[in-house]
Image (cartoon, rainbow, N blue to C red; front, side, top):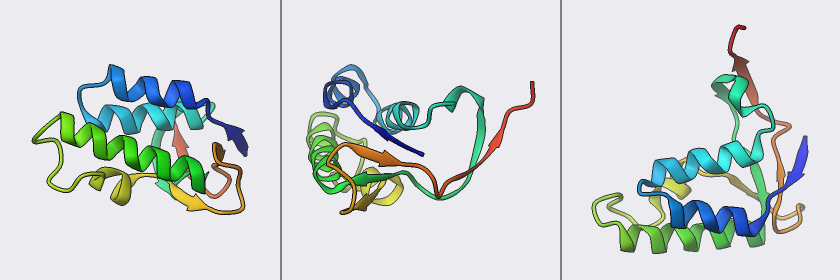
Length: 106
């Protein structure tokens, strides 16, 4: 499943969050339409276009500079737990088709 992230919403996550993990969860919420029903991510990561990936990496690096103690390595959370770069996607296009989830029981 593909969708397109709004760059303004992505930037707003960084300015409104105090923890980098909250930013990452916010990015997942923007990318996975039924996020509220997801219990666990079993497999995979969202894929994002090259331009969006680099912009988000830069935003994480800036975030780490402005929030000391969050990460020993600027952008480290994005590099280890963030989205995978896909050069075949548009800059802000996201593809979650390779991900597998366990959904919450109603």
